[in-house]
Length: 399
Ligand SMILES: Nc1ncnc2c1ncn2[C@@H]1O[C@H](COP(=O)(O)OP(=O)(O)O)[C@@H](O)[C@H]1O
Ligand SMILES: [Mg+2]
Image 1 (cartoon, rainbow, N blue to C red):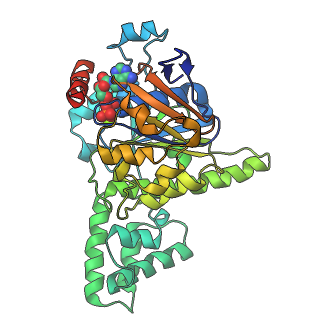
Image 2: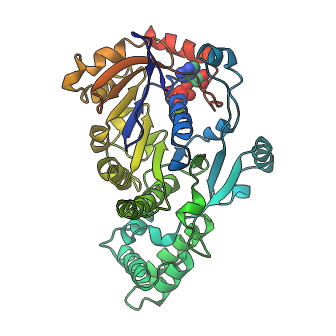
Image 3: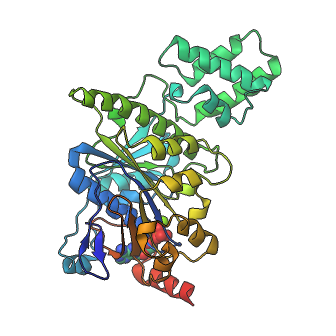
């Protein structure tokens, strides 16, 4: 249950048995991240071991889901719900001890958050992807050399390391010394991120676990279209797509599949699929939105700026959960997703929203629109202001 319809007072549900593409939007402080948390709680409760929920967390706030939501216990009681913490698996890209101070790691452990390193496999980034990562034009000397090195290694061996790429660049007889040197510097830099696996291929089922909240904490990494946050989305997205396509094929033959269906949720998603310009993660996310249905991949993108999200992804969303929006560009971007069955344009529903946690739910599958109150969280919401501050914030925009 996601919440309650404000007109009929009936519970509002979202069918998550198939693949969905969901847009969660709303102005700052309107309740997007909170709502994303509700969605994840529901996925864990209903999907159990048959679903892998993953959150890409640019703000480092979702680990709090391990705790019970004590702050809103009376509100939960009114809704007939109880406070409940969930199992959280915190995936830290890089070396946790380098990214966090020891007190924070202690505290995470004390709270019962299971944290582990997330290691990418260099082979999971395409030759083009490697060039993008280093901002190397594939038609210029440096890009040509890098492309060749990664392509050769991919053809020769399933697994290779960043050092293998460096060795291959060094041995390249056709490359000029200057491009070699520039590349070797960058590869050395990449090795120092400790983001790529140096020993063996890290299989997906050892990284993500079904029925628990898998949080990829990218908050300590730099953003930007070619930054490490995007790198992770690109590699993980591509990997999961391939693994689920294989699993789907097995399922069709009635064979057991190793990887259950996946829900990938991205908070602050405009960082990963910007409407203008490219980013490392964007192509994968477009692919998830357009072709994810068949392999059983669902995508949730949350943003305060729907106008800043790639148009193709927006148009593929079959569920919209919009909180209050005020900026004209954003209202219009959302409004352009209005459908005939809505009875009125989307912007008319949005302007009627009054409180934090209220949202318009548009469900293409049911061809329905409801104005609703999102239910209180059972697990603790991280970050953000206390409820009264958020309400003040809200009142300010209304003036
Ligand atoms: N459905 C809700 N019920 C009660 N409080 C909510 C609800 N949604 C949001 N809030 C409150 O509003 C604050 C801001 O919400 P948040 O989801 O962090 O905003 P944002 O849209 O910026 O992601 C939260 O700290 C929370 O206290
Ligand atoms: Mg937020």
